[in-house]
Length: 106
Picture 1: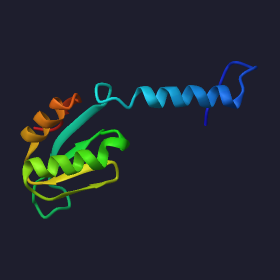
Picture 2: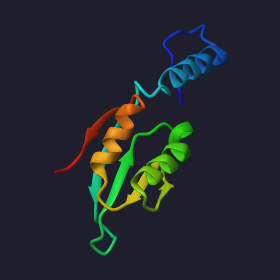
Picture 3: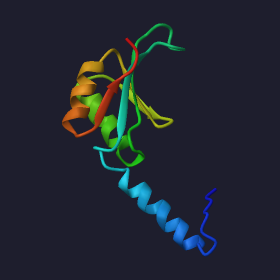
Picture 4: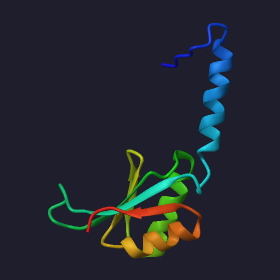
């Protein structure tokens, strides 16, 4: 839902503003990506979790990270899951591609 304080604003004007905001945030430099280690609901097995990747890069980046680490994983619910503890490799690979990376957790 979009609101405007301009009484003369049309739906097309508002929609165009939303489109320009969405397209400007899709570059890797503006995406803040979080990398963490997760063990919840996985029988204690570690999984490297990558969050915040733009939707258009998600599948390709997931495949690339799995290949770099030499392990399996999946892409679901807007997250990349890599089997094992590969936080350092994931962070390095993301920084090389121009993403702003932050590590969550210990």
